Amino acid sequence: MIDTSHATVAPRPVGVNPWVPSTVRIQAIRPEITDVATYDLEFVDDEKGARFRFLPGQFNMLYLPGVGEVAISISGDPAQHGTLAHTIRKAGNVTAALAKLPVGATLGLRGPYGTSWPIETARGNDVILVAGGIGLAPLRPVVCDIVTNRSSYGRVSILHGARNPEGLLFPSEYEHWRANGIDFQTTVDRAADGWTGSVGVVTLLLDRLPLPNPAETVLFACGPEVMMHYTTKTAMGRNVDPGHIWLSTERNMACAIGLCGHCQFGPVFVCKEGPVFNYERIAPYLTIEGL
Ligand SMILES: Cc1cc2nc3c(=O)[nH]c(=O)nc-3n(C[C@H](O)[C@H](O)[C@H](O)COP(=O)(O)OP(=O)(O)OC[C@H]3O[C@@H](n4cnc5c(N)ncnc54)[C@H](O)[C@@H]3O)c2cc1C
Image 1 (cartoon, protein in one colour):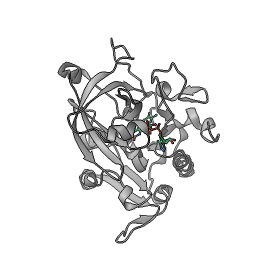
Image 2 (cartoon, rainbow, N blue to C red; image 1 turned 45 degrees about the vertical axis):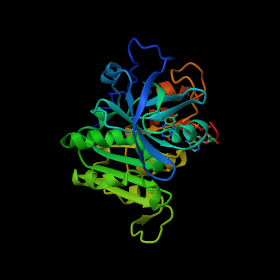
Image 3 (spheres, rainbow, N blue to C red; image 1 turned 30 degrees about the horizontal axis):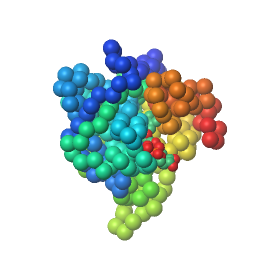
Image 4 (spheres, protein in one colour; image 1 turned 30 degrees about the vertical axis):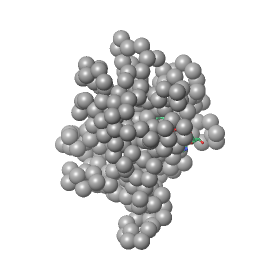
């Protein structure tokens, strides 16, 4: 029986005015896939940097003066302090402006916000992470925790799907993850020359995955909502308990502290009660188009 009493928590930075961003500097930029790069950010104020902690799955608001603010998940290792990795896709105004910034440039950061993946619940159980495209970024902190504390987890599988082989995120890390006892599998919607791997949607990998202990299996998924919908359906069809499934959702966000209502999803605010939700909490709203 899995103990799900470890609710995902949303610690609010103590004694910090949530409206005031801190200044961070771009320490490094790592191009990942087309239009996606990982930015290592360091606080200009060393003391703030030393104090900053986050939980896997939480996000920051990144602010470019004169342009705007965007919610971006933290994609780095929660156990490493000093720099904060954010893996960002160029989507519109703010992220396009961000993509033009060089190493050394500064921007504003508020956070961390939102709920986290319940890793305390996952420990001691079998774990499946399902990631569609850039959805692997918010799950990467969980992978870091699994690699560091491998013996605390049972069987671990990561199922990562992308449109094409060039869309698979963090390819340089797969070998390291596999060497740490993680069953890491990929699939693509469209193959390219030389691709010998799986072709098809990520749920096909989940269909074929050996699940010796479905009652003691925890599943975290992040990606397009349609992918998460079919992932949960497939997992439940394989006898994974719906209460053991967590999903990370995205909605347009403005305040990030549960006041403005921009990110309302049915009766919940994604910024405060999410972005990581237990499936049972949001199941009724997932199938309502345009919600
Ligand atoms: C909790 C949370 C965590 C997030 N984490 C990340 C992250 O780690 N990395 C990341 O790159 N993004 C992440 N996002 C998404 C990011 O906040 C949005 O893409 C944001 O709107 C980009 O702002 P912009 O001004 O560049 O584009 P906008 O001007 O807001 O959007 C420009 C155009 O792109 C479209 N668009 C916006 N977002 C998306 C999207 N996600 N997918 C497809 N089309 C989109 C819009 O419909 C619009 O047409 C996250 C969002 C949330 C709520």
